[in-house]
Image 1: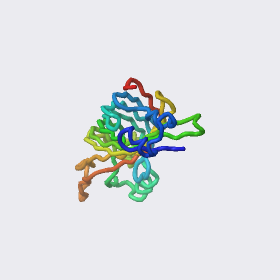
Image 2: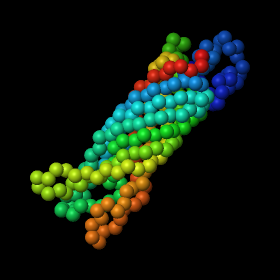
Image 3: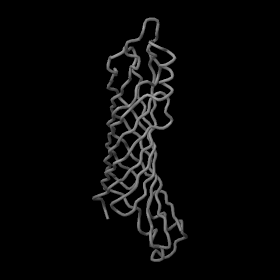
Image 4: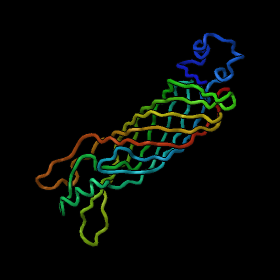
Length: 231
């Protein structure tokens, strides 16, 4: 048996035709996580749909819930980045000339503040012995980020050279959380960052300044710990 509810917990009974609450233990036990809850998440992150750069890293997030469906999250992460095979082929084909292309700046670190909206939650029951809860959440926010572009065509014996920038960034995301109990959950999400492409950096003679918006999509998975909150 499974159940999904939208909005307030009372909707669960309406979906079941108003049965005796004593006969619906899974639905009466509202989902884990809710008003005044504190949630701490630690996740592994990796880029998806890579073009010129790729990266892996870790992400830490703290969330406080004002109500069951709405909270605020403070988060940050660090990423180890490298150029993809496509970019390596571009460098091979351009020889000693440094290519200036959009989306060359990779995300190194980020610090964000997000609003988190939880429109869907539910519980799954397996013979009434194990009934993990789950919810679907959406998030959007604003913050700052460090981005970096590499210069691969350096002279023989010279160290690899990088150019780093500090910029603003916005993000949107969606994910699922599976609550094993009232303290522990598994968290899975896709999150996309958007930041301006720095321009006017060592543009070669006859070249053009690169400007625009870079988008980086990450898949993140990890664990979440909950504490506090209303019973």
